[in-house]
Length: 255
Image (cartoon, rainbow, N blue to C red; front, side, top):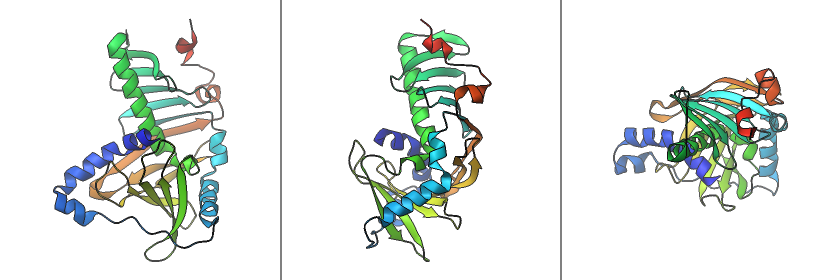
């Protein structure tokens, strides 16, 4: 999970750091991590469960396959039931076993093997980790190593501060979810090791409902002109429903 979040933020971090310039500017832009409000036990968990309900994470758990494009750079067909992903970028295509980080790779339609294939497997896994995190991090509010607390927001209202402290997660990484009037996240602020500016904010908008009923955000805007679009998002209960019966991963299963 730690690596996943680092990969997920790398592109945005590079853009923000480049635009921000010198260290003094970074310190000026940085916000301190907010202090959680003194709330009764269970209030933060109740807010987290309300957020889950707003995007129907139960429906997400029934979403066996999903496809989407990420920022015009990668395309995914993710078989969540079998932990497989078809990742396409440039001339590269990888049928990836996510658990093993192996599979089959082609460049320009030609199979590649050995060290070249291994590099593509690593790259495909990095793309999957990054792009699937942006697709739906709200299914991970109760992951091992997370703590949830309520934060009073400037201008009124409350946000959910999600902090990662154990279970293989980089200690100190935190995200403040800011909710819209409909109860769904409208933005988050980040305090993460990969970004030297604390409190970097990006929007969560363009909510799209999948065939299964789950909601995902397709559009994110942030500082310094940062924009990320997820396109052609489709989901179904099974891969066969999503592809019309075709199994693109059959080559991984053949002897």
